[in-house]
Image (spheres, rainbow, N blue to C red):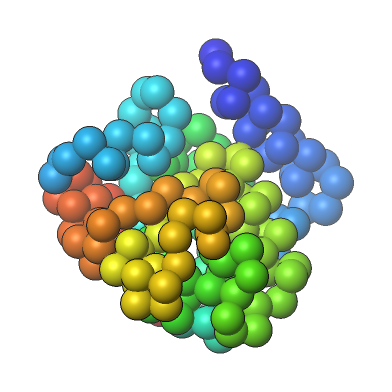
Length: 158
């Protein structure tokens, strides 16, 4: 068992014991690090393309609940593009509540992957230094979703 998995399990146990709810309210080479070194039984990709705090909150909550339910048996990616990219900005150009950025960071710490669309970043003149360290930059957000679906990921959109 890897240290990352052990930490994730402890986190999930903490959630269950302390609050009973989540705290977070192609296969080409760029898809190889979405999870741990082994394969999970379930795969899901969420589309996050709006800067609306309620919308973002729903997606983060849902991803957290799926993580809590399936633990190590689920691989979760949140594909972030268009106005949603501001969630991953170190200094967002649209108002993103800090607590949502903290929830995203917490989810990332326990294995949820956040993919940032490079096309969107270029459109707002952002580079890697403008986004959070846990985000993985992918060339095109929608292409990323398509490639993940081709690998068997279930696609969720609000």
